[in-house]
Image (cartoon, rainbow, N blue to C red; front, side, top):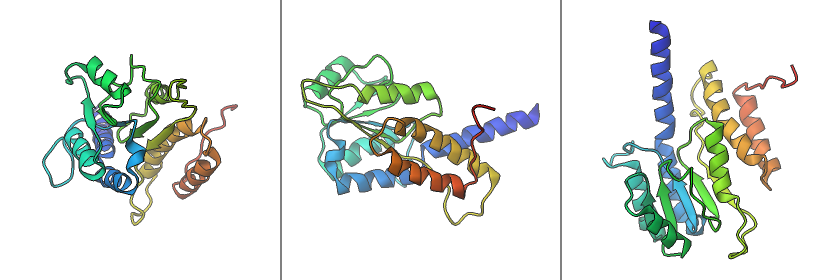
Length: 212
């Protein structure tokens, strides 16, 4: 069906726009400048492809450079193309690197109990990925005394000056479902859920009763 193919193409394009939203990169810079310690002992998940900012470079390179430039952080990439990934991981565990910048491949088969923080600049709506990423950072670490972790999810909301359209609700709902999964075990869940409730009210998001 031609209409179905067109719809799928548009949905895929919207997904790419969300993952590469320029304001995520600008917010990242603000966060680094405001408190570099948020990025010590952390993994930053970013998307593939090139940044939408003026500089023609990959998102991975942009994020890596921003962490060093604005935070003076010791950074390494961790992707399918990274050579000697086991060695990079060992250096991260031994505090040689402050931050790893990853594209997906950090999701499975990686065990770093001392990891304290994850920053999510690119995520899919797949629940399995959300659970895997949460599991990477929620493991206790007797060696460092770690008993809690921090998850920073960079979500995308339509600009406030746009007139409401029904498609906005779908976009925001998908973003909030991921946040809901992360916030379920969070110490600050009441605070975050108040913010979620405001977004739900603004974008007319209603969830079906699971008992129906």
